Image 1 (tube, rainbow, N blue to C red):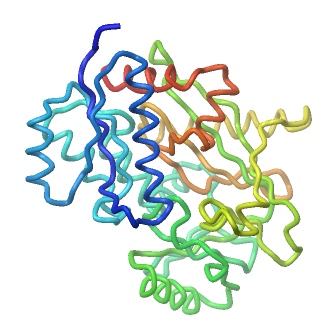
Image 2 (image 1 turned 60 degrees about the horizontal axis):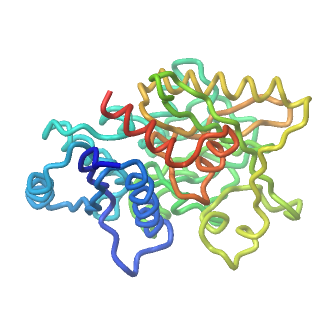
Length: 331
């Protein structure tokens, strides 16, 4: 097969001694490079560095036909994630995944929640760093979360706070900011099941909703919150990592719930103007009501991740999914 063109795989600038969540970006780049070669493209990996002149000069020297955008952090900060698509827009280079506005709006989690809340999409109650309350919380348990960081960065047992007053939550947010850096907000904990729904643009440009997944929390003590935290995702010798499982096998009585989740995921796609591929994360409360936790505009494409599992169950080969994402960018 002749070469179709050069694709730069643009990824976060990750140090060799970086944390597991950041190193995963490099693993994704290697896997995608293999799929692109299988499709007949000429892939070249390149880090996005905060020295924008250097990044621009490297891109100009490589002269790519397309950029596969895997940038999740810039200078290890999730709050700068939108720099990559913004710069590519400026250079008029087509790129995969969502555009600058969608990346900014969905990566700023409190802002994304406000947009969903105002659009009537259910999302758990939350309190901003300014002390503003949104929604009605049906619990006194809150989770203090990083406003911008992905991959559950900063999410652990110390993130769990029992609400007594807003000042206590604000103090907890400030404590986390000092330890981890960046902005934080507090979100009401939804006790129940956890799901995610992936989406992809199909071969003809149509939106395809992929089979959903549920995260199972096995042998958790009654007083331990079922939470997909940093340890559950990245620390292989931890209880959380070894007792969290993904299932995509559902009972017939879950059919209506799954249909609800898929419809809400599509609504989120259109509301934020997503492109290429995405994933929407949910909690479902004890009464069967779904709540959107967050929207991942360019979710992880590692072979071990949920997106790859979803496309496999949909009978889409990995390289075919990459081709759909690339074709949507060209489109």
